[in-house]
Length: 171
Image (cartoon, rainbow, N blue to C red; front, side, top):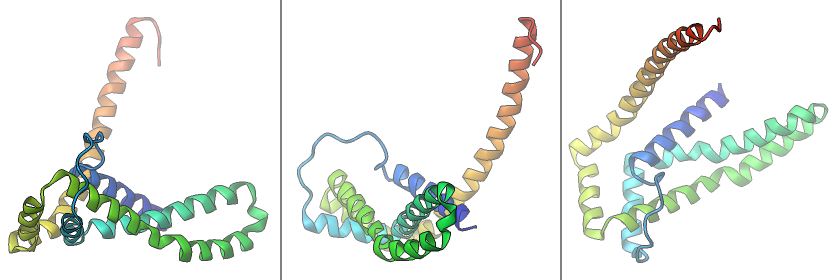
């Protein structure tokens, strides 16, 4: 369950990053954003809930490393589990680095006046509704995309079989 939630959060975070334009190709070197712009960008991130989506990422990395080590060293499970507790305490808060970096990316792509307008929008009733509804839309979209991809896979497999049969291969 934890691994499933973690992957779901990681997926949501990546989608959110793509939606705000930070997962795409690197932008040309822009002037360093002002501290004020970064601060406003951070407020936007908090209002949008992006920081909450990033929180489980470091936790997931710790668990991934633990599971990787456990595969070949299962006889030391007790020690590995104890060490993992300490690693969570040490590294789980490192997700704030992602928030800081994302704020800098926002601030490098938008001017301070633009960021103020964006912040005003997310503080408005419509912005708050957008923040509340967007994760639901993303979840629904992902579910729909998965169903669509499954159906497409069936169509592609049927076409592949037909084309292979034309070439004398029965798959």
